[in-house]
Image 1: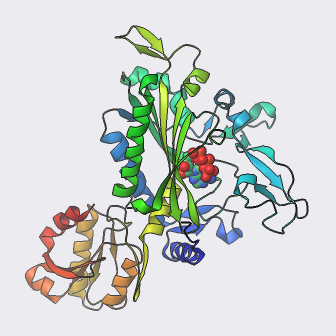
Image 2: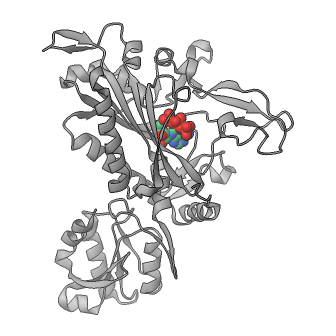
Image 3: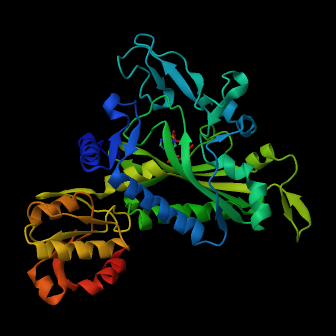
Length: 430
Ligand code: ATP
């Protein structure tokens, strides 16, 4: 069954993001820059929480993985060897009437989405973003911003191997920006020309590709449901057919998610064979000492978009209840873990105590402080940005050393000793 497109929900998410400081239109005071966005104070926390969780799970907690952080601009010969200069293209069509341009496979029907005019035949349009490096602007100084983080893992393969003495199977991971001169960007942060990826190149022997592919398929599913909190029913696997896969891939699964604007690709998992290492290294870069042979490892690539993760998480978390809007974020993803309130703003002893609790909690968590309006309004304000716990300091606190802790989802309150707060919050950070 085709899910309905919920553009009203999308508008509400975009408006909340702007209003509460998650995501702003880029360069806004100069009229903006088409499809560019800036993460604000709360957005950067949410995004960093996702990236940190990913790094911890896939790099630090595994013993078959190492990380790198490579330059965004690489030698142009990298892109010749990888095939991107020749093949990293999308089909472009132009309207014969209004001359607007579109990516052919994103146009429904064969008419111009803007004016209904006739479209031209498709031309291949290269998505690499160009610039010049150095003080001379000529053909020799043209360089490209990377369109994927992946190539650095291949180009640095030998350096990583020599410095870490890894044995197959092992992976190299990276989080960083990628750039694509998308023909038809859109849907807020879903498709932009500058975005972030979290990618793994997992090196194996050829014979192991099927079971390794399966292992990563399960890992990706578990990441989406257990860490991001997405619902299984909203995630769909698409086995990308021959002829539609990227030029390097022998098998690809797209993980699609039911965004408010429809079912669209969230992540990809590809079997890149030995295509990349063969293109970059004249000699096999890996020596299997036990077998006494040199070989080109094969590669399974789980690729995660950061911005598409943020958008999926926000779409899942956004809920409208009777008299409140609440982001039901997993506590570990929430920008603030806890908010601290003095019951009354005009009682210096309450404010002082609240400040003390606030500064103490800040040593371990990201914490908000709010003393404006009544407590009910402060709760709702925190609900809207997904803060899982609110702590209120009242007159009993001064007597007994305990505070009221209110839970975002259950909307229930309980009394907890100040000295136990840290442990309480830590225990809830799932
Ligand atoms: P699409 O078909 O949507 O253009 P793709 O198949 O070209 O995507 P990949 O090359 O597999 O995407 O890139 C890996 C991941 O990077 C994607 O699954 C997605 O999460 C993210 N990604 C790719 N392009 C963009 C973009 N323009 N904006 C935001 N994220 C992107």
